[in-house]
Image (cartoon, rainbow, N blue to C red):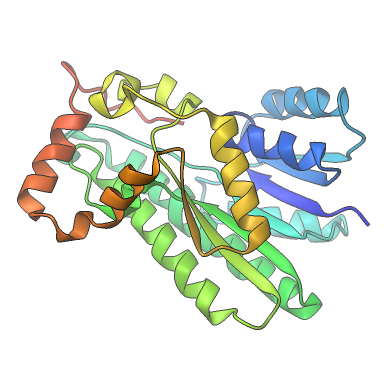
Length: 267
């Protein structure tokens, strides 16, 4: 029987590559994004190359209650989800005191609340069946504070901490939770902002590589995976809490600076 993966933020970047990868492996999909046109394009792309069923659901997960609406819609269609991939996200860049508050609240809603809500909704179903896999897209930003991306970095720290804690709680249930922590990646999120013009984006990993590493880690039930970076750099990131915090903050702030900071939301 084909496994069904629910993937949020599936219209581009890592989400799109995860959708393609799951379909190529013979699975069916429920893909979610806020634009119907984008979802239709993804469904047509997958349909032209695979024999997978693709269900499209248009939903803006930055809106309160949207995650519960998504769960209820899937249940009403009697679709059994085997893999939950929380990949949708928002980002923002600039000095926090200059940024639009509503933009940051929307980011917190989609990056943290929607992830929490969907995980809570689907976990009882997974536990009852004794099987299920969850992949939550976090970031290497989770490993440190992020001047000029203060809220984004904080939301990703939440995603990793939440995922790891739930994974421990689920030991012995047949259900696993994996946090995917990619380094700077070639995605629409970066392209729609000045982020790609910062020092931190001088070298980026491909979305397909990140998706491959994340998907494999999910299938193996790993706790987390730092993806898209050489092993020595992954060690440095993991040991960053032992560095002087002030020096670390200054280094990150410098890596995020551009000549003129763009405070528009990144989607």
